Amino acid sequence: MVAAEPDYIVKPVFKALAVLRCIGEAERPLALGDVCLRAELPKSTAFKYLRTLRDSGFVAHDPDTDTYRIGLMVWQLGQLSGEQNRIREVALPAMRRLHGRFDETVNLGLPDGRDIVYLEMIESTRALRMQARLGSRDPLYSTALGKAYLAALDGDAWRNLVPTRLAPRTDHTVASLAALRTELDQAQARGYATEIGENEEGSSCVAAAIHDARGVPVAAISVSAPDRRMDDELRAEIGKHVAAAAADCSQRLGYRTAL
Image (tube, rainbow, N blue to C red; front, side):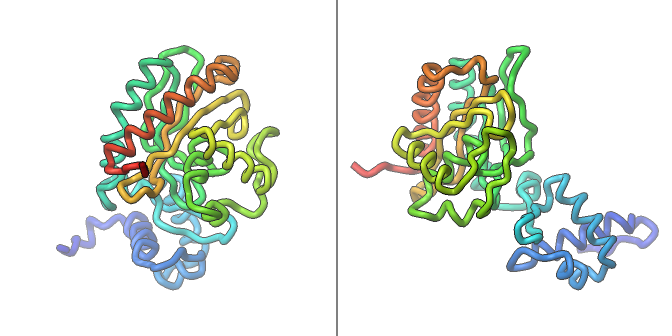
């Protein structure tokens, strides 16, 4: 790397990048104190940089352990594996088909720690529609995307990706691990997960997991709409098509179900 001339260095940016670098080079999530030591910054300064990097998606914060790790936005700028880009390329045709059939918002989400991150979406053309922001994140346990992913994991692996106490996002958010386990069992049995006002009041969402060639769940695809437009009958119809779309994506990634 060619050294920059001192007159052209923006010191706050330089320091923020130093914080990002030390998190990226660490073999484990770092606490604020660890970041201060590694980046040689005062606690208050490091904290401001971490929050800025978190809010812009470059750093992810785990509130349960109060530690920081690299966020998905780093990959989105092309710094991480190209596998996620392959998932997006594979999913887009299926997403367009779902959008064409239902004219509701279609989302592609990738797991990142305990969150689902919105990697791609095609918005409904209707005036009233559900809308998340690309790169935004929600808890796995309160979203159909997240629950579809958790349900596709082996055994009790899902327990490592949810907090022991499920903080309510709305009055309808699943309240306990036992209740979540029941929902995951139901999702596994029917091939898709649902969420009705659990992450956002007035919303309804149906999602299914996408698997890679090893059979490992790597993403989820969903259709979301205002709750008043998605009754039980339509939810089941959407679920059938979302599950088929996810299966098609999985096959294109090399996944083959057992005969």
